[in-house]
Image (tube, rainbow, N blue to C red; front, side):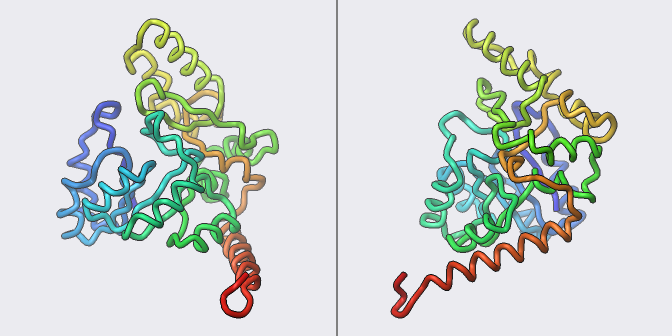
Amino acid sequence: GVNLTILPVLIPADYDSYMRVICEERVAVVEISGGSPRKYIPALREAGVKVIHKSATIKHALKAQADGVDFIEVAGFESAVAGRASADDVGTWILLAKALGTLSTPVLVSGASATGRQLAAALAMGAQGISMGTRFLATEECPIHRSVKEHLASTSTDEFATTLVLGSFNNSTRTLKNAVTKEILRMEAEMAKQGGGDFAEVAHLAKGDRARVMFQETGDWDSAMWSCSQAVGLINDIPTCKVLLDRMVEEAEAQLSKGASLIRGHGKL
């Protein structure tokens, strides 16, 4: 699968070429966030590519549904999704319940998920499943520096270890709280005092190259801005992906069975 964030103002990339390659390679699934996937749906359909759209609001989810995507991935305030506006700050518990009562398109949950209990809760509410990003960073197979994984699994890195940056540019992004994100927030506050600023002023701190070097070369988690959900507060080890998923499935099954056992005759609790 491929993840593609469409943010032409902040990330002026050649999105049309990206989509062309995705279709040519007949990628199984593409997850799109940020902009609308509408213009690409016909080509993706023809190539047999399943389309997931990540939405932080019901309004955007309804637009994606009208565009004809295959799945809506609702992303609560706790998640590491980028591109939020301040008015979008709604938690997964509310967003998921409203989405399931509003949408006809199958729903996935992206909201700081990392455990089998959360998987069970999502399925019990009517979702088709969950997606995980931050949790998979702290796995043996993830191709990032070991120091980053160890920091994620540290007991000192809890659910309070993240922050939101770039909110002044209507592109609020949840990241790990570190020296770089603190500096971005300081600069945003200064720009706000002066009536606003330009993204170019913080671009050197937010650029992806810093995160790439951090993830792949130095392992210095304090040296770059990088996405991190509040699920980090639920991470305390670095398992293989198989161990992680087996453990989650076992926990989810146990919780769903426990919930089902509470139902007595005539469908009453």
